[in-house]
Image 1 (cartoon, one colour):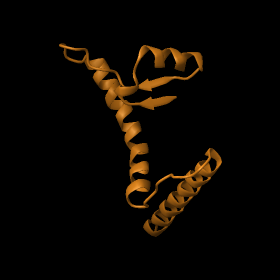
Image 2: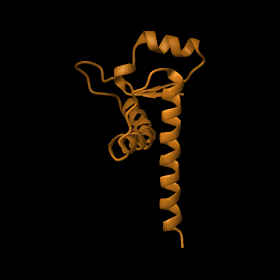
Image 3: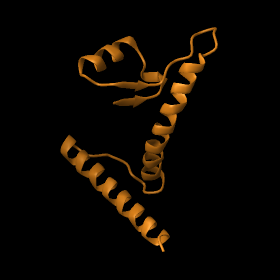
Length: 101
């Protein structure tokens, strides 16, 4: 599944996702000059709850952990991202261990 905001919704992107056997979870755009339908608004709200969980992880890595990818080569970038995710997960584990009785 591909989750994104309305900036990524286009016919070209939807066609490409379908050709790659991906499910589009991209937010719907509001029609110009008309109110958004209740169905589309509800679907966007459900998508936002999922996206918010992921976006909070990225925000924490970027702001509190000072995460910034500036490497030469995709392999080094992947290694840096993997290590940042590992540190984040260990930090969450420590948090949850302290919370349990």
